Image 1 (cartoon, rainbow, N blue to C red):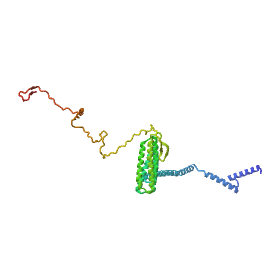
Image 2 (tube, rainbow, N blue to C red; image 1 turned 90 degrees about the vertical axis):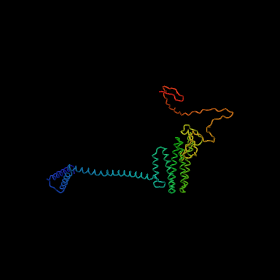
Image 3 (cartoon, rainbow, N blue to C red; image 1 turned 90 degrees about the horizontal axis):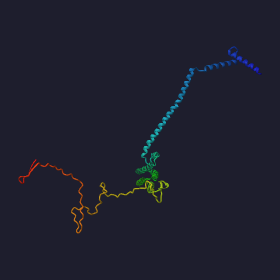
Length: 361
């Protein structure tokens, strides 16, 4: 079919469709169906457009639903935050109570590990090296006291092993830090105090070993040997503090090793001038008796040193000794108080011997 024929047919169909819509053309089945379809589309378009009030109501409904959908997550977030804060507070409270209850825990007790954890936390919060060394030695002293309590309770061998191992750990750490400070800054007094402390702890362990299990005796002996090494180390370091070379530059479990060889004295060392210590002789006087003053005379040697009371008699055939005048006492006595009477105006001698004179006035 040519283009003009197709165009004429399409135009005829269009005119017929327009007549059907207007109701002026005869209707057949095909065009009736098309007409019904067009009418339904018109009705659908007219009924599907809401008015302004309906659109506002729909908008408000959608906004309300969205608000309700967002509200539960916020409430859940606040609830989770509150529960987390309460859980943290509960953990802190339980931790504080547990740490307080573990204060008296002994090696082998369930709370002993918490006690050691608290001591480690205290060390981490201590920044001064001298204070850290003090804390280590304080913890070592506590371990010796706990070992004594274990002997009274008849604890197991494992508890002794734990206590002695922790004692040696704190002992090594404290001595190493303290000797490092002393070799750098000086301090004979600190070394003397450390030596005395080591001797005291060794004596305490020696007293406790008799009540400890036989399996722990070797551990007690090893701890006492370590304390003996501490005493020897403090003595050797103390003798080198006045030297230019104090240590060898190397160290062991107890810290810096003292140097050996000749000591070239360092006049600038703070310990170069050490006052001599003169031990005082033991006194045999009973407690509470007054001690003699430094200016009192020495005890009597059997010679009478009292001054003679009689006159000095010069030896025969000799020159008499010079007489030394004894100085008068320096205490002056006040002169006596006298009352002076005025002289009489007229005095007549006695007329008869033996009588008093006649005084007028």
